Each structure stands twice: as C-alpha cells, then as structure tokens.
Length: 300
Image (cartoon, rainbow, N blue to C red):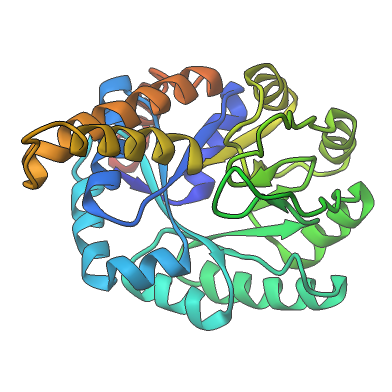
C-alpha cells in the first residue's frame, strides 16, 4: 500500500518505532528494499534523490508505484533532498507521496520561506513535506576521505521553523554524516540536542546519515523520538561488495540473473538488521488494521 509520510510516521510515533528510508536508483536496489520489507512485514520508505531520479528516469517511478501500491506492506515513495521547487514539482508530477526540500544551507529565513512555499503546493495534493534544519556532515564517496563539519540543529530555531512552515516532518542534525565513515572514526550522536528538540517540536523527527552509526546510539535516538532513519551506504556497500565477489569468480558470467540474486540477498541482510534495530519488524500489521478500521467507518 502506498501512503504519505503523515500516514506512515503517525503510526510509528504512536507506537514508538522508526521506519527506515532506503535510497534506490535501479530495479535491483528497489527489489532489495521491497522484498526485505515484505519478508519482515515491516513498513519502509523508498527514497530517491534528484540525481537518482535523473538516472533511473520518470518511467521507472511508474513501475515502483505500481509495485508498492499492490503490496500488503505500507510504503512511502519519498523525494530525498529535493534541491529546488522544480525537482519537487517533478516528484509530485511523477506520483511521489512525500517530498523533502533541503534548504539547510540557506539562511534561516530563506529556508523557512522556500519550505513554506513547498508545503503550500504539496498539501493541496495530499503530499507530505519534510524540511531540514542544521547541516549533516559529509564523508564523500569513499571511506578514505575526511568529514565536513556538522552544524547542530538549534531547538528554538526548530520550533520556529516548524510553526512558520507547517512541515510534516523535520530532519535534524545531531552528529551524523552522509556516507561511510573514514577508518577509525566512530560518530557520537548528541542525544542532549535531540532531547531538547523533542521537548519543543511535536512532529516526527528524521535522522539523516543513518549508515555507520553504532546500533546502541541509533536505538537510543529512536527511543527518544526519531521516527525516520535514512539508510543508503550501509546496504549498498553490502550489495556491491557481493557483486565484486561474484564477478571475481572464474566463469561467473555477465548475465544479471547470475550476478544480482546474491547481491540482493546481501543487501537484504543489512536491511533486516536495520528493521530490527528500528523496531519496525512486524509493524506492517498495524497499518492494515488501521486501513480496515477506516473502511468500516466509511461504511457506517
């Protein structure tokens, strides 16, 4: 079933678990996430960055929507880090049920103004909106690079931002980075910052850069109030590590049906672990129960 982010995270917030958002850009990565969710009976969020959409093309989105709409497991199709009004409108036109405008690098008031504009447009068509305040660090494309600085989310700014924009969810910066961490680096999440934000903001909170963080810290963040955790590098790393292994075998062949099945299974193992960590395993039943209740109310 295809939901928007309000429908997805409202249940997660009420029942104290988080939902993973997994970036995809082709059919094999998409299969990895969808099959993992269905096997675990777990809700999941399919995230697509503007650069990933540019690669996989709009027609592929039609396939994704058809596949997840007919699944007994709840999914959200989410535009991740939309970088302009144009990229947001492209996602809405394609059928995305949720979008994010990343204005985190803009001056505070400009971030508010642009995010509020997206909220006005998207709420007209029942598409939920995620905003971001503070900046997530970057580790680059390999584990050999350094890390850019994190600008932590200010709780009072978060309160103002939510009130003035009307966003449905808020991505907060508490110490994570996008990508895989350099060797020897162990990230430390600022739980004090998260608790302070949670005290003044009541909408679901989002943790970007969820790959590579200690399980204990991620579990603690979920316990405090994170409802959405973004995962990309962790499961993709497992997928492509296996791909290299298969291709290195003598006479491995080049056909996708020989190469990708083991890669998909490797990626799924990581996602299974994340779903258990987020406490979302088995929670799809809650959404089916809510849907049945809604149908009954409509019949009365």
